[in-house]
Image (cartoon, rainbow, N blue to C red):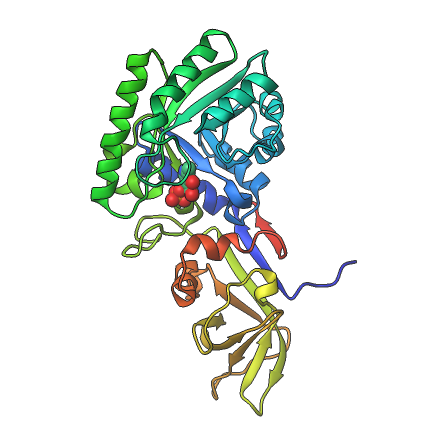
Length: 355
Ligand SMILES: Cc1ncc(COP(=O)(O)O)c(C=O)c1O
């Protein structure tokens, strides 16, 4: 028997499945829905999340790197898996074996593919940088990349399945400009002779606010996990439910100082907060957070509220009970909700709610 943990996250697979259905109708529309399961599915657990996404109607999965794709292939049936964070140290033959599509940004990646998988079988998505300046071929290198990809396609080394880009999501105007740049790059690639089946550029934010960016496929990440990509709208406003909630037990009570410790800290993945910022929920009572330490947090005890050793508190993710949200925690720690949930990836127990 193991030691009873003093903290854990609950991951609601039914809530996630509901979010996938909602994303299909409200974010994808007529486009296909690719669900991003990068960073251990934003800290939620990649295997369970990948299986649930596909069962709930997602078309495909975005995975970051080849090894994650190979790990998820047994859980993904024949669904398309796309990896785009490619390193010179990767073995591209692993992508061929696991049928992982590669997001290609540079000539060196095409050369490596031709060298390591000369027999062919890998589909590629050529990526153009449309303003984000993070991954993607620069416009001045695009023509050469397209020409080389076409040459390799004609010799049977690869298939150019898609052309794609990623948006900065800094403003609607910036996204519109990037979308226009993308269309020019697509025209250029087609003029060279490429015949992609798919065009994709939008993630959560653009799929919500710029429907013309949905094209053939949208790659949705954080909103499917019930966390908002926006500052001015909550995931709840968008119709998405939280999937992860974080919990801890009271591990000591100090009546003299009117404070208690709860058994979760930054070593468990909790993002640190400035002193005396934020609160957690005990029953229906808010307990103010005094500090986040390595293996515990200190909370203040209101004079009219009893707390006992072993009691349960919720840190975020159960709005029905009045708890904070992951977005609340993000605003307290000066970051985005993605980081709050993703940070819980490995060190903390994940309890899956399956029905
Ligand atoms: C290339 C790519 N597509 C899609 C996503 C999903 O984005 P979001 O979580 O904003 O929906 C990400 C996330 O960083 C990404 O890098």
